[in-house]
Length: 201
Image (cartoon, rainbow, N blue to C red; front, side, top):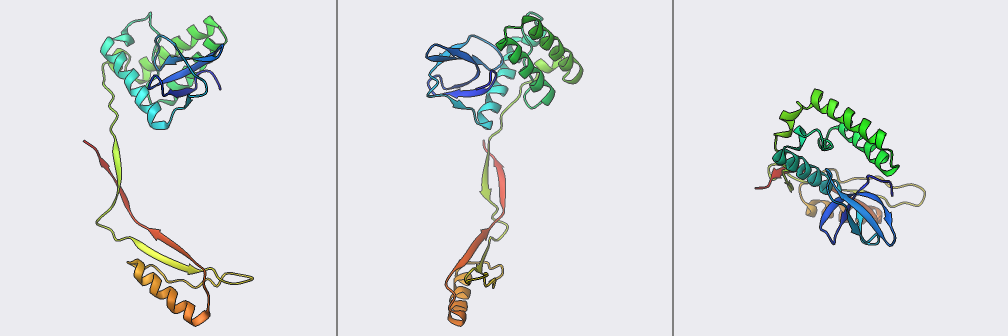
């Protein structure tokens, strides 16, 4: 596993940056910096996209509340979702893993400069980022579609199709008629619907 990889530790119930192995354990560091902790390598797993996003938002909020962006003695924290910030953060993590203090300092300087130019410097640290969960639900205003296609045949599929139907019973009725006419028994059925994202809370 590469240093800087974000992993989820179920024992600590949080996401951390993989640092290195120490004996039978691995060392993880909180996203955005902080005290490292030991974890069981057999239990950690790569963090999901949602877990990485939540950890990044939490780190940005912590930095904002504590005013860390204005403290030149503290390393800057990459802004979630910014490709340049993430690239510089990875460069810094690799330098840390190689114990290259000069390269770590260079990455911090570049990251601060970038954030000052693109994210408003100290003012960006005063913003609160919020993770907004959504649910995916079927769109009740659009009817789903059901369809079947005959895939019977020795050399090639029959290819006959029911066309889009508004109910499964219509498709089944077409299959029965087609089987009576052709003695074909194998069909590929498909279902299509429309979905919308609804904000929770």
